[in-house]
Amino acid sequence: MQWSTLFQKELLENWRNKKWIWVPLVIILLSIMDPITNYFLPQIIESVGGMPDGTVFELPDFSPSEVIMMSLSQLSSLGVLVIVLLSMGTISGERKSGVSELILVKPVSYSNYITSKWLSLLLLVWLSLFLGLLMSWYYTNILYGTLSFVDFTKVFFFYGIWLTLVVSLSIFYNSIFKSSGLVAFFTILTIMIMSIITKIFHHVLDWSPNNLSIYIQEMLTAEKINGDLWATSGVALAISVLLVLVSIQMFKRKEMAG
Amino acid sequence: METINWALLAPLLIIEFLLLIVAIVDLIKVKETNGPKWMWALIIIVISIIGPVLYFIFGRRQR
Image 1 (cartoon, rainbow over the protein chains, first blue to last red):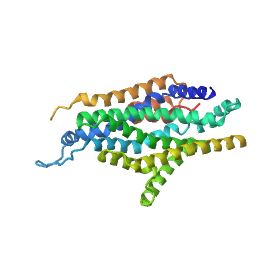
Image 2: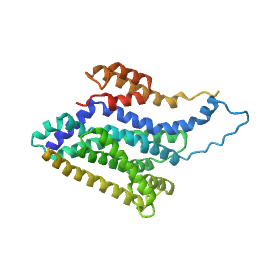
Image 3: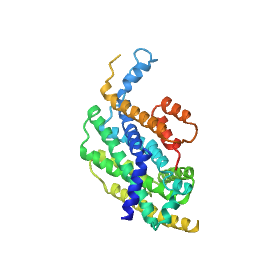
Image 4: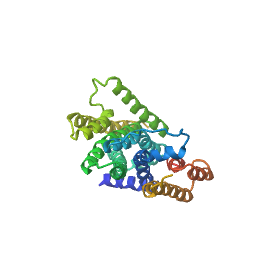
């Protein structure tokens, strides 16, 4: 009851600040940019010119699964950046401006407050990801060749887990810092450090969440979901839930002290 | 030069346009922004795609 009120407040807030419009649009743009530019690359090179006569370009022919992976790699860099920036102020901003105090003066439980924020962000991110990948899948099918709808849903599902972890990290830092700049900085720093550690200790850290994209690609080429992908997804989800639980505790402690 | 297939590019242009319109309408409606309004109007119009996104992230004042 209380939770759904808070959740609706979040949805309304995201509607008012237009997140429901611009986030899906940006994610769609990021997902379809690479498939389209690669398709038009010969024409782009030709119109830019400057090549001596007789230059022959061997442009690689991309397979449908490679194209959808291009979308994922855009989402992993710029997409993650957008998600971090849009979520950086979700709690820290409210604490700074005093809105959270107004809310928490009432008997609102800290866990309801945090989880409603977390889930409303996840809803926004998953919906945007769905639309983005759907467009990318559409372009892949008309420009490069067929990729089955089942493959598309699998890519969507497993990649969504990675973005869930990103959102959870941001919520975690939101519960610690009051400055949204610090939240964004530490979220990105953590993701970078995770990826470096995964690269250095790749022989031990088979199930590091940063490997999700690699396993998704393997899934597309091998056309079956291997155990590593399930395990990695499980690890990513477990870390996400843990982060949210810790955030609730951190937030409780901070608010009690403040 | 070969003809460019505009049907393929149309969604890109439509999305770019939508972002611009939503950002401008929001800028006009909103009372205060971080920094002068005319500056944001310029950023939104001149820098395609990134301009509106910058406005939504940094321009709107957190209440």
